[in-house]
Image (cartoon, rainbow, N blue to C red):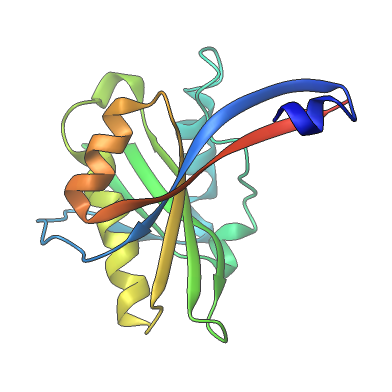
Length: 162
């Protein structure tokens, strides 16, 4: 990071961990596939995190058309969701992202179930390299991802230059 900072002004940076699925641990899901008909519910879920700066920062509703998304409902409310940033069947690679649990429904395993469902669907589609990125300080998410069968691959910084 110092090398980059010596060449350009950095507006913000965040230490991250890239994780790779080693072996998916079995997990009772309860997650259901999401499609473009769920765009409003997903947008409402993600907006829950805006006041705390926790909402996913790389989501577009068009991802529901081309990606793989699963959600967990609590009564009639979408309580948690997970999806993909990118899927390349030609390269047999996918990146899981947009994982979020509504603040009122945390610590119930909902995001774990949604993430496991996405990983299972990708494996069923013969995707062999499945990764995700997580903030290095997000110990709860790191613990969940390890439990699901992800292992650290590398550390890196997300950054925005001015």
